Image (tube, rainbow, N blue to C red; front, side, top):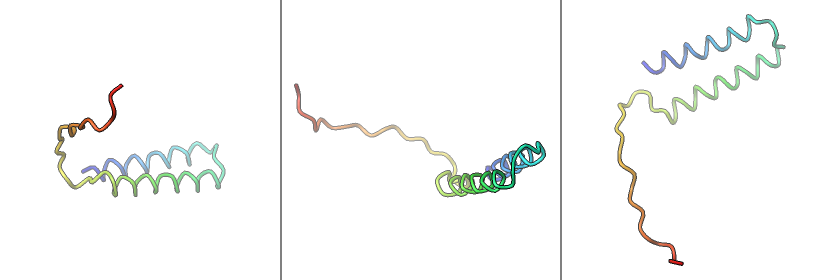
Length: 67
């Protein structure tokens, strides 16, 4: 389901830039590169198909010197 929202947001973002008519072709190409990079990062780091499982942070041990 996360892919649906991410893809819809990407399409809406691009169409908004394209239909405004204020962006040059180069700017639109750069926007497409940024959008596709964002989608790739979401797919790689976001793990949209996995359910969330929050965990408590690990306790730090005293490795530093005391003042």
